[in-house]
Image (cartoon, rainbow, N blue to C red):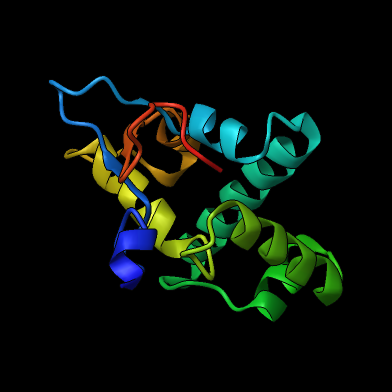
Length: 137
């Protein structure tokens, strides 16, 4: 059965905000681990997430790849490479939208402004299905 292979439902982000009584870890550390401690990949994804979230806020919805390319002055193939890298790190996700939504939920009310993305990346999360605390990615 598929559920026995995947530690979380394929229609949900593979982590959730940590409750106050849960250890959790900062999302930026989860990202670092998913990136295999590859600093360049982690930094690309941090910039990508920040830009994606900024553009989503401007549009009031998730941006399309061509909108991202136009706004940030990168080629469309570069956007697809970024999306591909993101999907390799978080296979259940097609775009950063749901992942960013979980992080915003982790801030809790009152929400900070979108300019406070540094705080957003520091949200403590718990990976679903992770039994070792180190994740298996």
